[in-house]
Length: 255
Image 1 (cartoon, rainbow, N blue to C red):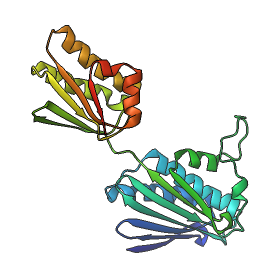
Image 2: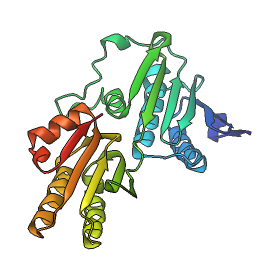
Image 3: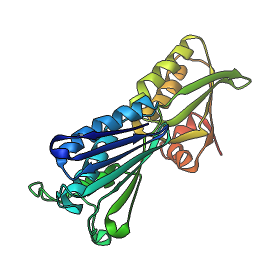
Image 4: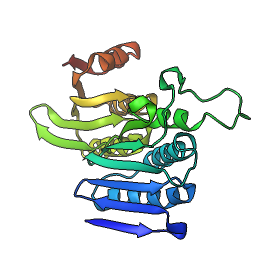
């Protein structure tokens, strides 16, 4: 589906949608950025993908940079932008202007130390949010890949090792309370055997690590003969358990 609209002053605002991608071509007028960004987020959400604040910021800064620095706000020049959804938690943004480009290899991509320095913040902000950023065509085209970590879930199964708990993704402070309540509920059900399969876990922060200690202490204080095991932990997690002495409470098996 393709839609073409004319804005005030006959500026160009073109939109072309497909199943997993949307393309724009706009005149170099910053007012049009406020039309592209909400439309893009709406498209992403309609496609069943995650539209995070990072997408809004990155898209806005890339468009502003292309308009102001690439095309020098010349309304006769246009900016092209495409958003491709790689999956429900990742997308690729490509923005290209009609300018001469710039020396991107000398760009530090770091935020200035001086808080009163107004310029040179846009691309640094993009760099902080992007998983990948690539310049080509002499710097007049930039490609950015954004990924959003999927929500962590806890799958619980019962087997010969007792209750097998398999978390997905990262176990961080954002899910620590849900993790704690899950384990306390199992303790209330008189569960004494816990096996944590960390095959899909990349990292654990200090807040969530304390949940493992609380479980061990709760069972010990109740005088219950508990069996606690961690399996398929990656090397960094195994080292973390050793450094924090968690391996004294749990039998830890690496991948």
